[in-house]
Image (cartoon, rainbow, N blue to C red; front, top):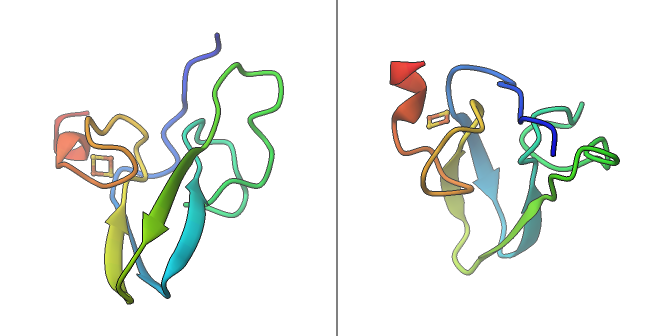
Length: 78
Ligand code: FES
């Protein structure tokens, strides 16, 4: 399996409507923080998550969070 790459050393603050989303776990998507299929061949798969209430979410950009798909502050240590 290929390692995830850091897309940015900060979370993505996104306003999300209720629904299902796919967070990019490999770091290669051009549509950060969401999957665009660029993980093909890496062995890494996107993380599906559901938003129940509309609002701002902080999605991990460094791809090293311990709480996928959300930022847990790990980016400050890399
Ligand atoms: S952006 Fe990855 S832990 Fe904050």
